[in-house]
Image (tube, rainbow, N blue to C red; front, side, top):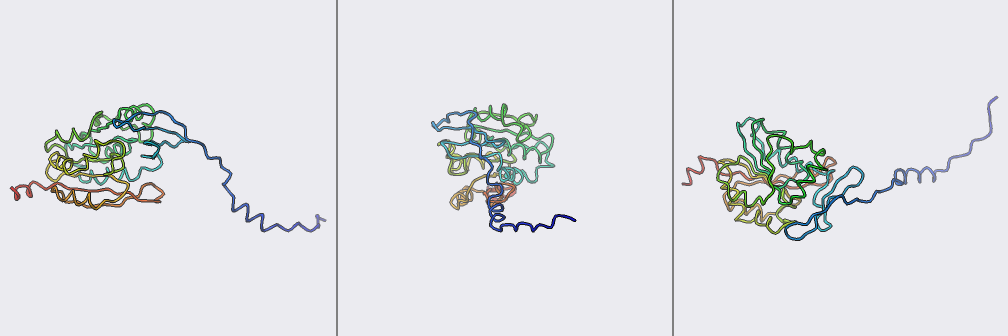
Length: 258
């Protein structure tokens, strides 16, 4: 005969505690500083790593995170819409970040496209080449990419109807956290320069962590037809960012205005 001793009743409170604290014992690793750089305005830009997660912070405030890049990819997808079959499409990307915007643009553009990426902080370019490249499939190794260290405001100001799309992933959007110079990018002066730099019917796409009605109004005042899209910040869909899509007048519309 088997053991017929009465089994000890399970304590329901213990089962509750196990469910309550399941997974709570995981140790949260501290962030490790990999490198730091000073921006042109004297701000402290820091590249950090925790486990397999990278972050770039400016003066302690997180600017970007390798686990949250879906909205940066949507910037490229929406900004380059319609260019997949355009011969010799030319795209300007302001802000390299961790390379996710550049990679998403390359994925939708034709093989003969030209993509110029302008980054103000040289250390960010170096980090992408030496540390971060694997995150977005090494976009800087693509022959369609031309990487330029410089001020995107100056690049746009010198251009004349030569881009099919301009994608701006600079700072946190119109607030421009890392450089006072970047604020010019979102001013009326910067937007007029962007309008002139685009080919007829070209697209200006701007990423931001928040909406700004005054910026939408500024886009329309200088001559763009503008709309906003709220896009998921990451795969978890926990929060949304904003992408402005501003179209320059078509050639026919420009002739009508002349």
